[in-house]
Image 1 (cartoon, rainbow, N blue to C red):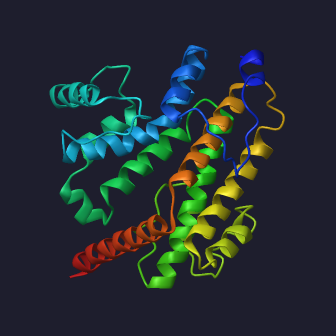
Image 2: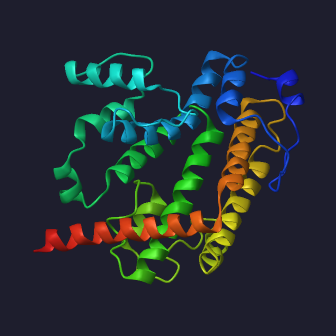
Amino acid sequence: MNYYCLIAGLPDIHAEETKALTPLPELKKELLEQLSDMDAILLRLLFANYDNRNLLNWLDNKEANLHPAGNLSANDWSDLIALMREFEHPKDTRLMPYIHTFYNTFSEEHIAEGSISREDYLSSLYYAYAMNCGNSFLRKWFEFNLNINNLLTGIACRKHGFDTKSLIIGQNEVANTIRLSNARDFGLSGMFDQLDTVMRIAEEENLLEREKKIDALKWEWLEENTFFHYFGVEKILAFVLKVEMIERWKMLSIEKGSQVFRQMLSNLKESAKFDQQNEI
């Protein structure tokens, strides 16, 4: 389906945008009112990333403040958790299949046996589900992000002496190659087009500059992969992703960047401890 008027009305935004943009929750609401039912599903799939965070927060604290960009409210989560407890195969249009898989299979034992955090486990299910959606643009976008994240994780693991195999998520060709390769380029030459660029970015010592360069790479990918989708839903999805990047950078500070890096190292260390326990 083409959205001539909707896309023509979207503002022309740039990576270094400074003017105020429509907040993501409001943008999502406005777009859902104008998209077809099938395309609305694709938009909700993008925003399911916030649902993942909200679910983990809600499981820890039923009174937690949930991110407003998520598709589901605290009441929704209460209903769905009760439904998953009661039925082996719950049917509810609000419930994405990967969430049900996560709830049914994840446990503390799962962490210890697989050396994987619940965040990474949920993310791996989310990526697998999204990479099988009915839209080619979104499938490629999620795989592109998965490959970047896994390559950066692999580089960080080598630098800090952590086990790579247990921290790479997903089962695509790039993920499996990173797990098994000892080559400097992780055996990805000719397999991942952005390999050299990502490896150069990983050498950047300034954490905020590194994040900005990764987002610039993603922005460029969005531009290239929507160039011929003049009035399709792909243009709308790319616009949402760009707004998300701009919002994130408006909130990010040097202190926040350091905090994110410290948390990443903490997660790697925790996973390394699980590996050592499993070897004993």
